[in-house]
Image (cartoon, rainbow over all chains, first blue to last red; front, side, top):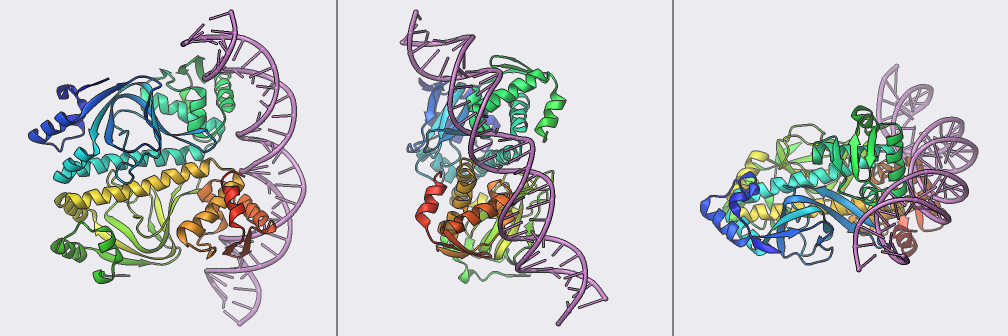
Length: 228
Length: 228
DNA sequence: CGCGGCTTTGATGTTCATCAAGTAAAGTGG
DNA sequence: CCACTTTACTTGATGAACATCAAAGCCGCG
């Protein structure tokens, strides 16, 4: 499950940690650990103590919260470069959300202790972290407002376009989530997600084959998303 | 409108910027500027270029976004110590939300250039900033999920308790917002906010006198908030 | 092979938005 | 300072959107 990171192969080091010079990179690479997770596994459980700073190297995960009545609310579907443990790590001692894997993923882990040491020793690195954090939280907030202002069909259309445009860059894609998870993400019932999808199919806006979705009439779908 | 900050009187320096030593504090204090705003004024407009890093020294403000159809969505009602310009300042060049004043407020401003210089020169300061940022965004996300999962009456009860418990620490308080703004905050119509308030009044859970609210039966209100 | 979870469709009822209309309060200009 | 306009607040009636309930088919897994 755990193996040393081969840093030469790590896109992230150059892409994100531009702030490091050679020796710092070395330290960083020696301290961190890669973990592989497969679809369905839970990486982080709400309430757990935060020990590691982790980020998503490849794959797809969801961040979510479980309500007192046992229902889940999905906060974000996160691609690589959006950090996994970003939200609370600098202000809380425990996670207040869970993370589970939607597509086989590789997570890089560094102990919070080591991270803080690195951050204190390198202000540019810390600034970059802050920038990244700002981007991710901005995305969460903007997206949650965008969803809130739409009606059922608009919400569903919005999610389809999100997968198509933001995540897969393709008009055809395999849904990485169940209908129920879509519902948990946009705050409606599973039945109504299905109903909307069926309507889109009947109206020849999309083709559905199980989890496989093809967007046929993107223009109309966008109209619906922008309040139809 | 603008005057030099009297740093001896500034609670924030000690409370938040514990990272500074004497000379750095001096620099900081000399560079920053205090601005006074009164109820109703707009401090930041969506789309404006970000020039200053500003934080709320005293008063109360709201962060909000205006939708394409011209309606406002309130993101957060922010007290002192929650930064005003926190969300996007490190990842965007322009604000993607607006800020306006609910109660006469004092804002401390520092140019982003100066702030970045300070941050790069002092990693502890930057870490503290990050912590603060993490707290604020966490609060926004947690609160928006909490509101999303409630029904109309639960949402309204939640807001009343928020004002009573988090903002004013008092069972009697003056609402700093209109009924419409409450509606914009919890994502329902103004009429339904009023209806819920009237019902709470009829059920003797609260007393209403214009903007003045007194919470009489907090226990029941909490039950309604926790899903009634 | 049977069980549980996911998906789908239909019927029903509740919640909430919309529309309408009126009162109160607060700002505006002569 | 008073008529005037606008904005905020309030209540009621109606209908649409959506949740809930129910039932059945499908698929994967032990």
